[in-house]
Image (tube, rainbow, N blue to C red):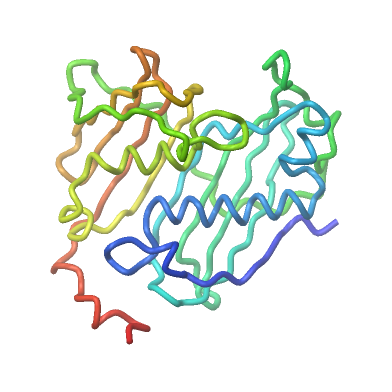
Length: 258
C-alpha cells in the first residue's frame, strides 16, 4: 500500500494571520488536516477508531518553517507514517511549493483505550505495520528544561465551548493559539518563525481556568510557553524566531492581493 497521502491545498483566508501569510497556528491546522485525511486513506482515522473504543492522542509536534506561503498560493502537502513502534508512531508531513519544501513537520502519536485511558498496541489495530517511507524530518524532540524561576504568568484563559473538540477536551490547536497570544501582534509581524515544538501533557475541559506563562532563556528570539490548570501542566511549547530586516509588507504589496 502507498502510505503517502498527497493533496494540493490553497492558503485561503482561513489559514492566514495578519501578515497575510500562512499563520503559525494555521500551519499546524494544515498539517493536522492532511494527517487526518492520510489516516482516513489508511483506514485508521479517529472516527474509525472510536468505533473500536479507542482514540488517537497526539503527544508531540515539531515544525520547521522554511518559507511561509502567502494568501491564495497553492501548495502540495504530503503526509505519511514513518514507523510502527508498537505503542507509538511518528507521522511526517512535508509541504511543497513546486519541488521546494516550505514546511516540514513531525508528529508523535499513540492510541488509548476509551474507557481505561491506557495505551493500546498499534499492532492489534488497523494501522500499517511495514513499508514505511523514509522520514523527511528526523530531528529528535527536545526536553524542555526551564528553571521554575524563569516563568512569568502573562494571562489566564477560561476554556469555553469553542475550544472543545470531539473528545470533549480542549483542542490541541486551541492550546497553540492560546500560547501564541503571549506575543503581541507587532512582534509576530516583525519576526519570522523558524522552529516550533509543542508537547501535549494533559487534558483540560470546558470551564477550567488555564494559567499561561512565558520564559525567555535565549533572548527575545527564543521563547518557551507553559500552560497549566490548577498547577497541573497540560501543554508546553518552544518557538524560535528569526528577526526580519524590515517590517511586514503592507497588505496591498502581498502576492495575490487585489
